[in-house]
Length: 392
Image 1 (tube, rainbow, N blue to C red):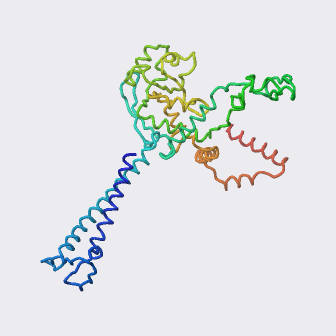
Image 2 (image 1 turned 30 degrees about the horizontal axis):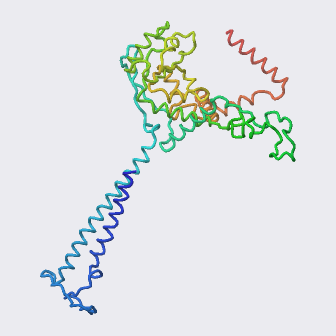
Image 3 (image 1 turned 30 degrees about the vertical axis):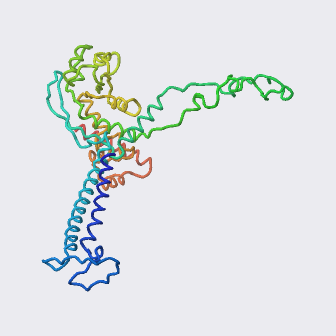
């Protein structure tokens, strides 16, 4: 706000300086009604003695007018330069605010992430290029999706009985003649027997909120791309733990991330790292702030978006990385395509794999007899000829 106010103030001062200096530069006589040797004398209507300024020795004009012109030129120049500076600063500031507003998709370009082995040695690189939302809408869409998802998963609110849910009972006293206020039941909110309509009433207070499936996929892909700085691809992770070993897993996490296990939230994505009988899952199940998921769990049907947002470090096996790339890759991810687009692509691949000559098919179809009995005889004859060719 301070920067915006200073830019606006600079613009106002620049415009004021330019407005004051430009008239002084262009027409100084309109502000100073004095006599000039090069122009006709003006009528003096004042009461006091008239004071005529001494003419300039260079151009014959009064010195005040000459000084006024130079002063106007100086003020106008300063105002023009200040206006240009203020406009450039304001434009740069607005551009910075517009492009820096998104914290999720500010790195939507393809990024390189390291590939490490089980000992923590870097053995290569992988390119992360997932589909991302625009920087103007990424923050809003991700926040909306995770808010609706958490609202859908929350527990049923409390149920407080209302007046219609309790027994009415008999009328406490007569309608008239007792001098008291008229009441029909002792279970009225006035007597504290029931709650008002403002208290939670179970499922009646749940709002119908839905997440668009396609938007949820885009939010997960955007968050995955934004985590590239803390992402590491592990080579040989799927088969690196034939037996459950928690100490070995903690040492590997420290060598991969450079942090002590449990200091920051870490998410590991593997193909087989799930289930109580899996040794890889049992190796890291008891480590604090450590979660394990499969590529199929990074999905709207599971808690994939929440776990990706919580994870400060992402450890992905090479096989799972290729699965995520096929699912959320920019331009190739099947999760971001409609059923019609997937069908068309598969049909195009089949057409390239099995080329077809339409005219040859029509000619072969014309050789088949039209009636069914003749087709049976023709098929029997063709089988006999094929059997003779195979026997020969």
